Length: 169
Length: 68
Image 1 (cartoon, rainbow over the protein chains, first blue to last red):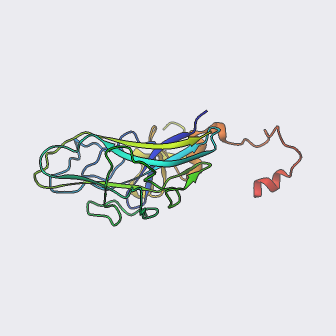
Image 2 (spheres, rainbow over the protein chains, first blue to last red; image 1 turned 135 degrees about the vertical axis):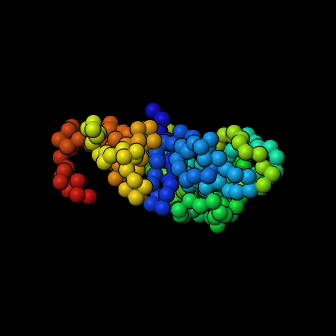
Image 3 (cartoon, rainbow over the protein chains, first blue to last red; image 1 turned 30 degrees about the horizontal axis):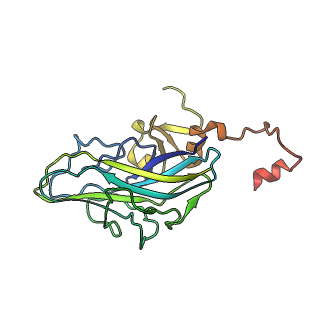
């Protein structure tokens, strides 16, 4: 039996954690599984930062989870400039990202361009290290990511977030 | 109001942001749990040890094990 893994997202000043989110829509409100139609981003602004983590809820007989990789596939939209920034990186990793109340301004350390294909090595840490691993239930470091736009950006685009890990039997 | 599963303290739709601070929400059901351990016990009841059902006990000190 394989390990059971989910994506969790923290929101609000109190770090409320929603387990097993079903989408990663980003926009003008801080909420898990938010409705982007009801909460669109006005061009020229940043989305609320997302704080998410990969959570192993059961090992299912496996011995190790490691080598976490995150990336986005699909374009961010047409017109203007859109940038998807993150703390995920394959080198000079800044350690575990600390949670803070999500904002629509720049966040220290969340300044790398989100990869648009599978990274060659881990880019999200466990226990503050890219070489970290889980041998029981537990979570990755927080993945922080945010989309920035300029005033010429066209509202509305669809892309896909990818979360990958290695599982050792 | 229907009875909540063991470990759940409410539903997110019935609680304020202040009440949800630091809590764990099951994304599938909206149920709210005080701790991650409570959430995991709900999600994986098969992994919860039931007192008195330790059939593989080899003579250890159960009280000491629970206290550890």
